[in-house]
Length: 425
Image 1 (spheres, one colour):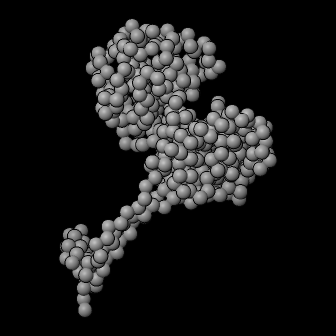
Image 2 (cartoon, helix red, strand yellow):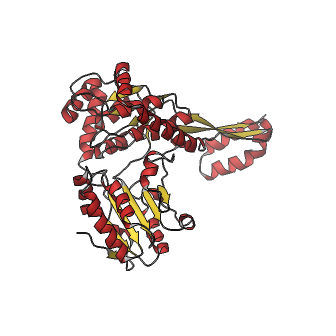
Image 3 (cartoon, helix red, strand yellow):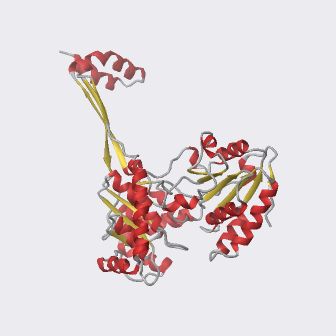
């Protein structure tokens, strides 16, 4: 049975525990799979799909008829909901788009241009749950960025069927290429290319420890990645005016992701903490994914009681959670004090699920404390920048002394001479 912990000067790590990194077990297995896919291409991917997922068909690509069947299987209300969510996501991410710049004083032009990536892939998990929301949160900002080709990879079981909602979400986002493959083999195929899978410039989207490890191994070598996502986590800060049952519901919403997820609470009243605990157990009994949620609560849930919300925010900044709920009467002044969080949910009526699906802000967020230095997925993840420089003869002559001095101070006389040579008659 959970019990509240009274804050007495402990650090966030002492209160919440260390967060596990990708296991060492995954590294050699993934390395072997990647090497095999690079060597044998589609054949290796198909063999691993059969071994891990039970999918025996060698066809890796969703057909037009499968897209059509998915649209027939999904009702119009669901499609309309997806369209509204896409509109919200598009509105938010359109604000992120940026142009290049140029500094031009006649003899000297220096600037930066922004170029969208040519081809990206979105990994959509298909294990204990399937996630059409992942499609939207990745494909929409990629489209806004101007990416020419977006593909999706998602694992399938022995029946070879991709969840219809995933295919409908893909089509509504303009994605026409969906691969039936998952795990490390899918990441390898996308990173290096096979006979039927086109090599991509970047892979985004969440996955299990083997997917994350595969992304780590191909990152910066074969292609780019968005981030290394660990287990999902939420930290709720609640004052005395919060509803204990609502807070418990929000914590369980995170716990049902998987047994490794973390649901944490910092509150200002011990009585409230016990109210949340009672509500957690009562609500969990009604969840279809009760076993997963309760395993998460048993292993990773912590409830901390502090004297005031300001101290709660200090601990939150130290912990740097993926999701942070400020379940307090006046959240906006506290928002100014938040420095480390992936996404912040403000007030009594903004559960984290609003951000997962509908509000428009991205739900692909830095985990495991990386919110100290990382940002949510956005349009910038789907573009690259290129610098350019032009100096006229006069501009180079005026700068040559400084450049030569700098180069020679580093012992690179050849650099200096490349400038000096242009000043010789």
